[in-house]
Amino acid sequence: MSVAAGAAATPPLPEPPGLPEPLPEPAVEELRLETVLAALSDPLRLTIVRKLLLESEQFDHPCGWFGLDRPKSSLTHHFKALREAGVTRQRQYGLERRSHVRVEDLNSRFPGLLNLVAAWQPHV
Image (cartoon, rainbow, N blue to C red; front, side, top):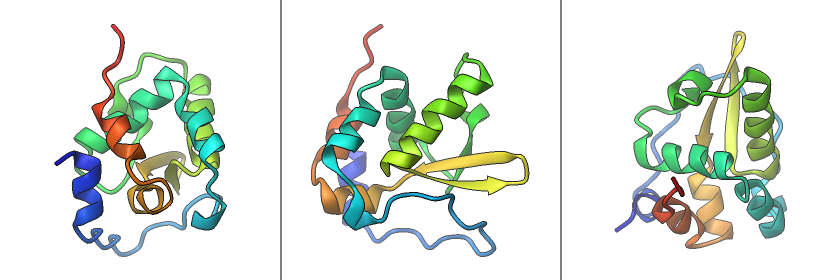
């Protein structure tokens, strides 16, 4: 069973107490396949989501956790694109934004999509 499917099969972990409110994002019923696929069409964004699906151990992850060698402005753009498409949820912790994949929401709208993302192999 894949990570994404396993995440959907088990009840979601409760959110830790005291979390900041999520930044603006589309509601589950507003998620559009073409918008999600457009966000995932960029290899860097696909890598970000795949890493979150396969290696995530905490609720939210800061940009530095990903180990990406890109300018901060570029990473900000990519994380914003994922959030605005509804792929990730971001929260503001002081000056830092942290992200996680909206697994339950995406699996309910587009069954199997996250399994494909988890199985994707970056072209090296």
